[in-house]
Amino acid sequence: MSILHTVNKSPFEKTALAACLNHITPDATILLFEDGVYGALQGSQIAAHMQQTLTTNKIYVLGADLKARGFDTDRLIPGMAVVEYDGFVELVAQHDKVQAWL
Amino acid sequence: MPIEVNGKMFETDEEGYLANINDWEPGVATVMSKEDDLELTDEHWDIINFLREYYEEYQIAPAVRVLTKAVGKKMGKDKGNSKYLYGLFPYGPAKQACRYAGLPKPTGCV
Amino acid sequence: MSEIVKQFLYLNRRAPYGTIYAWESLEVVLIGAAFDQVVSLAFLDDGVFQLTKQQDTTGIGMKNFSPTYAALGDYDVKKIFVERESLEERGLTIDDLQHLTWEDEDDDWAEKDSITVVSRAEMAALMDDADVIFSF
Image 1 (cartoon, chains in turn blue, red, purple):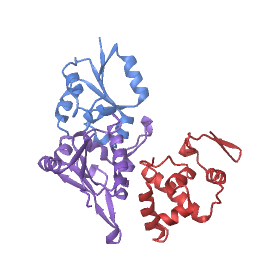
Image 2 (cartoon, chains in turn orange, cyan, red):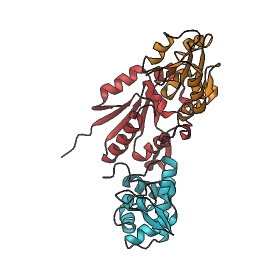
Image 3 (tube, chains in turn green, yellow, blue):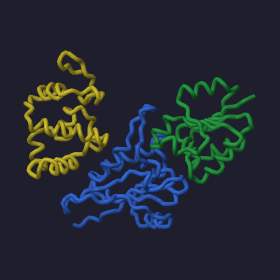
Image 4 (cartoon, chains in turn purple, brown, red):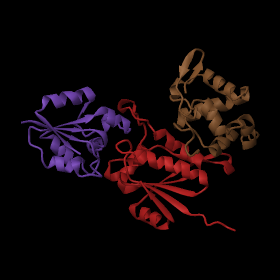
């Protein structure tokens, strides 16, 4: 059963992303949105962990939330994929269920 | 209560401020000033346009003190004082002029 | 009678948009600045994200309030402190932040920098020195 994990909290303030990463299986997908997009930035203290996760799992970032916070896609850790709201909906449809890490 | 400007209706809030700043056109200021029995002169329009530019840049309506200082810098000390601004807008430059300019009530203005 | 002027420190620790804290803080600062207080602003932890350049909220349907930080100088808010460690932990540098200035009326409207980058230890000292801290 494939799961789409969504994270909408900043990894520097809440443990939602860390908890998510502790519970993903190889066929799981991660979507970062709202304050969760900060977890996708290059050069942060969690970037290495995210980079390592990218070798096993696909990670998507909601572009509108990234742009709202002042960041271009070139600030993302290489390998991150950007989607917009329609892509968000498609991801939900493609997976058997959604686990929202609130 | 909505106001009518050139045959078009504009939504306002309970204090008479325009509901949507993007709806604004100069006729809004003209209609609002007529209701206050005030004739808008070039000097009034200078302030109204200044407020619109300020909002465009900073996304807020300035407090009276800030408006006074900014007008003084841009248009000279003789205009950057409350006597001059209250002379133009007797109900208060921030409240009355902001309303004519389609801006929300200034932050901190009670 | 001489009034004692209190030092107010607004401590901002939250990112914009995800929660309402950042905007609420800014509104309180603007209201408070009308009362001639000595006001300092501090940005640490996720609060540093409030000051990033080029925020564009058209895609998320929220008001972009980042241009309002540039008005703080007009409100006589001249002391803005940003914590270096908080920037570094998030992969940011000072160049990612808006260049905020205030104009010195007594110096022919010369533009002066408002932001000072401070260490965590200096931030702790700022908190110690303040009479009142408002936390957001």
